Amino acid sequence: MSTGVQFTGTLTPNQTQSWFTFNWPTAWHVVWYMMPATPITGAKLDWSVSVEKGAGTVCTYWITVKNLTANTITFEGRYAILN
Image 1 (tube, rainbow, N blue to C red):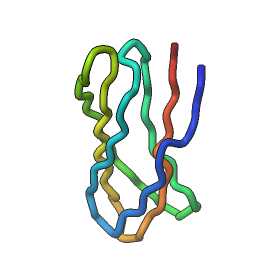
Image 2 (image 1 turned 90 degrees about the vertical axis):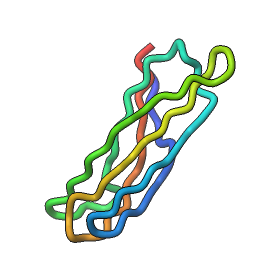
Image 3 (image 1 turned 60 degrees about the vertical axis):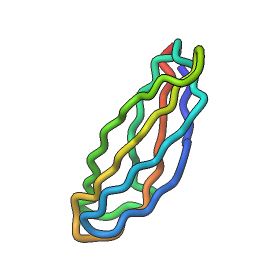
Image 4 (image 1 turned 180 degrees about the vertical axis):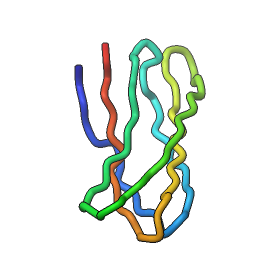
């Protein structure tokens, strides 16, 4: 398994925004998760991931993240490659 940080984002209270990352091999099984970069009591994020097949054997991940709190949150978009 391999893990890492793909991007860092900041969301204002109740804001939703999308990020994308491209040229990932379609053969990989990738799990995406969001982690607050600085601890905030009660920090809550929700996210969804969509996959768009690219040319041949690569794809693009679209990651939509929503801040569920009344505080601005900076977070890391992290991944884990399972195979």
